[in-house]
Image (tube, rainbow, N blue to C red; front, side, top):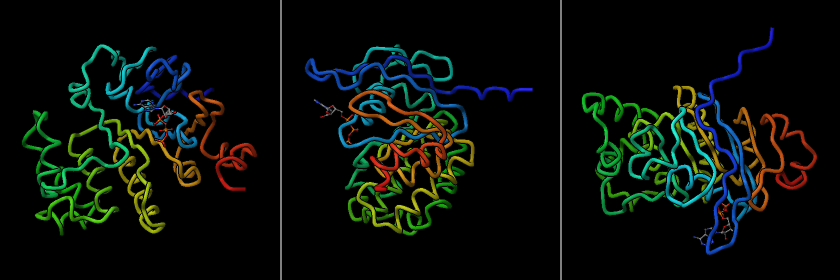
Length: 241
Ligand code: ATP
C-alpha cells in the first residue's frame, strides 16, 4: 500500500516577481507539507528572498499562493501574520531601542488568546536562555547571534504555524550557526512547519525533508535533503566539493 501523501500547508504555483520590469522569479512552483522543514537553496540574487516576501504579501507578484487552502494573494500583508505565517526577515529587523521583552511583546499584538502569551514567553526563553538573561536589555545591545535568536523568538511569539526563515545563519560564527540550526529543528519538532531560505546549503540540506535549488529565478533541482546532498551538481555548485 502506498503511503498517504502529507497534507500540503503551503502551495506556490507559477510565482513571478518583477522589479522595474525585470523578471526576478520565472514561474516558481513548490509546496511545503505540514510539519516538515523545506529549504530553498541558491546563490546570492537567485530570488530566495523574493519568494518569502511574496508569500508574506510584501512584494507584488503573479501566480497562486495557497496557505491551508486560502489564497494569500487576496489577503493584505498585515493580515497574513494573523493567519499563522511568521516571517523572520534577512537582517533580523529587530527594534534596537526596545528591550528584548518589548520586541517579543510587539509580536503578540494581533493575538486574541492573551491568556496563553505568558506560556509562550516561557517557551521562547526555554529555547533561548540568553534572551531570558537579557530581557530588560535594549535589542541593539545584543550580539549578532542573540539578535538572530530574538528575531526567531519574535516569530514564535506570533504563534506562527509556518515559519519563514530568511538566511538565519548569515553573519554568525560557526558555533552559533550550529546552535541556530539545532533550534530550528527543536522548533519544527514542536509542530511548526519551516520554510528555510539559506546560502549555507550543507546545514540546510542536513535538516530539510525536502529541498529545492533556485537559480536565477527558477527551480532547477528538487528532492529530499539527502538526495540533494548526494547530487554531484549540488556538491559542485553549493557544497564546495
Ligand atoms: P540574497 O541572498 O542576496 O538576498 P536572493 O536569492 O534572496 O539573494 P532576491 O533578494 O530575491 O535574491 O533577489 C532576486 C533578484 O531580484 C536579484 O537580481 C536582485 O538584484 C533583484 N532585486 C531584489 N529586490 C529588488 C528590488 N527591490 N528592486 C530591484 N531589484 C531587486
